[in-house]
Image (cartoon, rainbow, N blue to C red; front, side):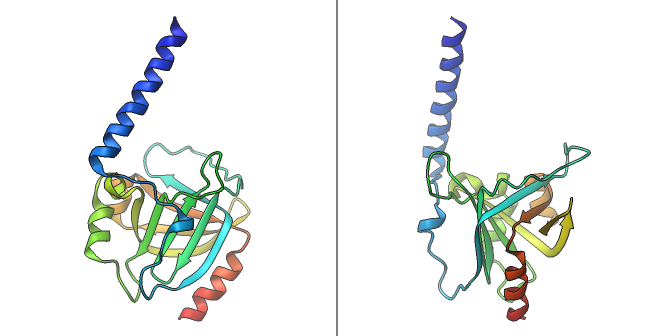
Length: 181
């Protein structure tokens, strides 16, 4: 009897999620079918990277960052797109869009609005938008990474201290970013 209650609770959660997604218009966005904006240039892509958002509140005292290579990262001249691999699929679903406020083409009003909303505008868009003020190449726990520092508004909306991108190909990213200067 307990197992039936368990499955009934799972079914209830799925039904609530379906209803919320229908009401808010949230749809899955896949990296493989994502079209770049007009004039946007692809700088670097890695389908064997890891994305680690570190929480501001409730974080563990000691963190380790295992390399599972589950995320695809697409870095363009306007934004960074993070897409984890979908379970039982070869596709990557976009989970985060990171926009830098100090770029030549600053984010538009829609991105600023989405970044300040609950969960970074996830409901209605299908992915979180994060505004960032800086990025730096570092080593964390002996692994090369890019540390992305969010703006105060994005950090509080998403409970995020910073985010790390771990990859074996960060040398290529650094080179392409330096060429853009």
